[in-house]
Each structure stands twice: as C-alpha cells, then as structure tokens.
Figure 1 (cartoon, rainbow, N blue to C red):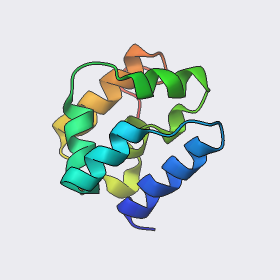
Figure 2 (cartoon, one colour; figure 1 turned 30 degrees about the vertical axis):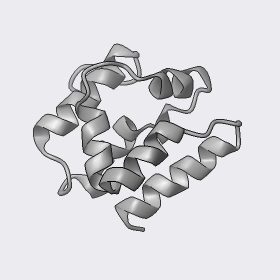
Figure 3 (spheres, rainbow, N blue to C red; figure 1 turned 90 degrees about the vertical axis):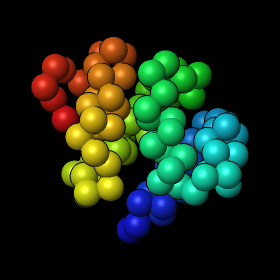
Length: 99
C-alpha cells in the first residue's frame, strides 16, 4: 500500500460513521496527498477533524496517527512526526515519548 492509498483508505473508513473530511479532500486536490498532509499536520491547532475522530474513537484514522506509522517514516521529517505526536499527546492518545 502506498501512502496515498493509506490516506484514501482512512477517508473511506471515516465515511462509515458519516464523516466526510471535505477540508482534507479539498487540500489533497489542491496540493497532492503528501503536501496536504504535511500542511495539515504542521498547523499547530487541533483541527475539527481531529476532534471529530476523537469523538468517534477513531483517532487511528487521523493524519497524525498515520504520519507516525513506521512505514511512512521516510516521507516525514522528525519535526513533522514530533508535531503529530504532540497533538495526539494533547488528546491523551499516546504517552510522552510514545510512538
């Protein structure tokens, strides 16, 4: 599976609980998958999408969680991965120094 396929697979899973991440889809069409994900992850705020995924107990589908998956380590910088990790830590999803 490519990174792009992984993102679209997550979007499809979100549709199962009637969530369509339109902002993400628009960003992908404008910037491409990798650049869109980087832009969204680097945004320091906790997005409405991330909040919705937490509410649905589906943070494993979040961009932040996907960015931290080991198979994508070569796509993202350590800084990008740290920002993703900190957002998840803020939401009490992972412990400090966790992956």
